[in-house]
Length: 260
Image (tube, rainbow, N blue to C red; front, top):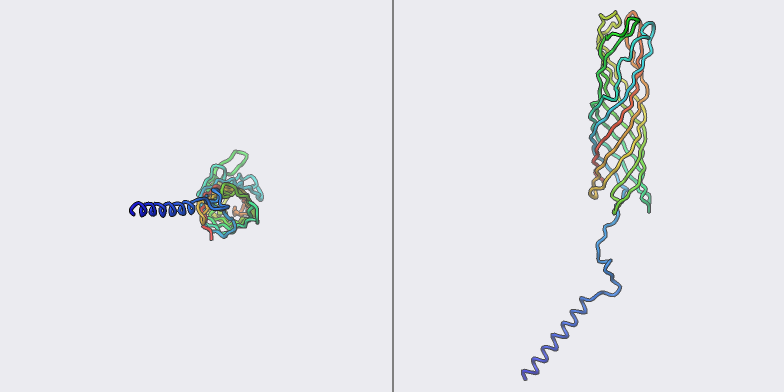
């Protein structure tokens, strides 16, 4: 009797074990590759906003045209390659990924403050040589620019984008001149200042890295060229002369952008 009960129990265990093994076996039509989790490529169509911080160096020739003997006056100052400044600001824009490709286009607006400035010596040239008549401080306090851009994405998830851009720029150039009215009677006013807003163009390139789904970290180079705008200096009885300013700057910035 006991032998029959033990044999029956073994049979039940065998049947249950066989059924469980069948459940754990490979499913029809299900491959091992399908069991691996594969992350989808990033979509680069989004709106974004953020901030940037960096530095710039500039070359800003300052030419002059004058009346009378003041045509001999030297270059009253320039922001040259040795002038550097810190730039910081914010940006807002959008990207659009062209369907089925890794090509991305977009547009962006940026606003920045800058400490870029240069101290210069104002000189006057005669047949006896050149001698100083004062100093000139030229600065670029702020900058606005609107750009269009185009680039392409790459990487395992297309998480990196290289791009180029171009557009219009608007910036202020400020000139603070301190002249000595006792030197040859050149200037009636000893302290002269001017503020002019210059329009121009900007272009460059950069790289953006999709750190996480909703944040980009980027690096950008930007060149800017501002057009001419004149500054009139009063030289009293000797007349006036005009200094035409135009600036060209190179900028490098690190950027962070939130996506929404």
